[in-house]
Image 1 (cartoon, rainbow, N blue to C red):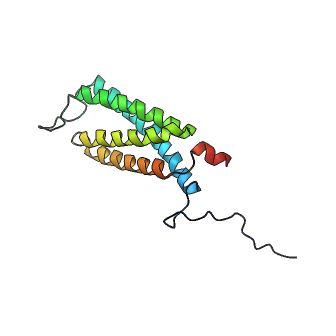
Image 2 (image 1 turned 90 degrees about the horizontal axis):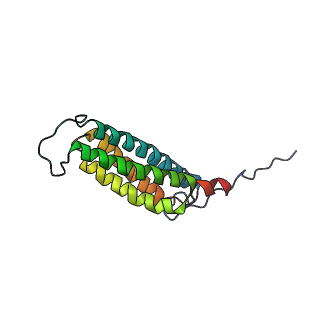
Image 3 (image 1 turned 45 degrees about the vertical axis):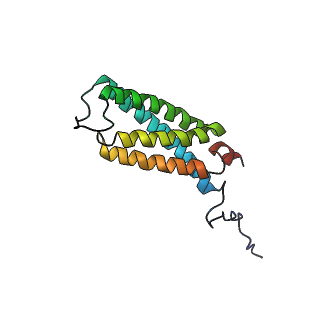
Length: 152
């Protein structure tokens, strides 16, 4: 009886910084997770937008603020950006190449939106900004799209 000591699967080649290479499971998993976060974040943005449009008194009134808008206006802003984020997240999950570039731009817009919305919902805004940073990183560094990573 002889034992085969060869590894079951080859190790991915290290990337330029010694980390995982582009197209590895780590990066394609990050891209997949970014797509899910965009889809969920977009749906939440749509719900926040509908709430802001339907009831103008949902969020506490704040004092004078540089980016102060009527809460109905904030509702429309959240609704429109939420729809765009959700559609782009769906595109990322489907593996469309356009969705990666658009996703980075939309995540930057999402980050700016929640920075401006900070006085109304400070905790959620900080979380949303962190999610946007991760999404931009995952889409910028991910090798394969989730669809092509499964077939490779």
